[in-house]
Length: 261
Ligand SMILES: Nc1ncnc2c1ncn2[C@@H]1O[C@H](COP(=O)(O)OP(=O)(O)OP(=O)(O)O)[C@@H](O)[C@H]1O
Ligand SMILES: [Mg+2]
Image (cartoon, rainbow, N blue to C red; front, top):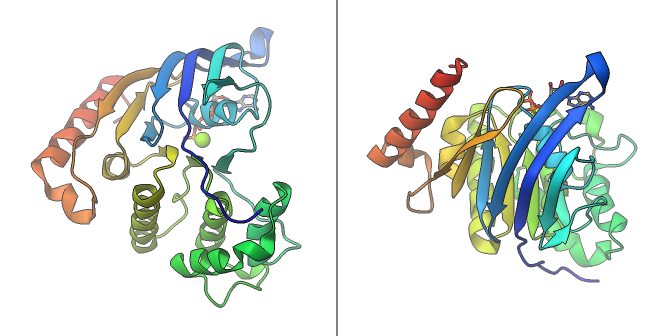
């Protein structure tokens, strides 16, 4: 198969709850919560450490069983790992025995796609995250931030209709972070995949999202879903606008109410 763009998926979360362990060791990690995400939305999950963001992402991807409730991707119930979504885990690791390019190609091979047909696209992607010249290096020869940029290429190379990105920019320095954030926004504007994005940065969530889910401290519940009504594209200058500042203040107020700010 040659490069294609999948259609963006809808995601529906119905009364989803997750408990880990049992008896005295039981941990109520998430929920119950509901959420409907329309095709092509960019939704951020924002909440304190341990509130279940990664747990929810893994359940959407079909990599972790729910305790209660249902999740649908494109109206299909999620009951097995999904191959139609692009995932970047919080601690994304590249396989050490493959080069940077080999790691990106692995994503294609796992899906039975023809890597040769994607050669130009992989070059473009690695160029866009400033990894030119490192295509044939091993992961151990890269810095943490460079590895994270390579992992982001791996998550998006097959242009999935749905992207689940768990703190994809967390290990980047401020300048690289802004550049990759702009690239991600550009990719989203051009292709309109459905994106679920985890971040600890309220500013980043406002800059990138159509909506923001504010999650309570553990056990995390989606407490507020906030529409972000700002024009696109949103560069750093948007942070000075009145609408941005009032959205930021509103979310800070909510976290202040939880006692986490
Ligand atoms: N495999 C697991 N077994 C037992 N408990 C787990 C497991 N994974 C997560 N938990 C617990 O579930 C809760 C939610 O964890 P999760 O990793 O989803 O939080 P998070 O919101 O992603 O936090 P962070 O912002 O620090 O990444 C935590 O209390 C954690 O200890
Ligand atoms: Mg997490």
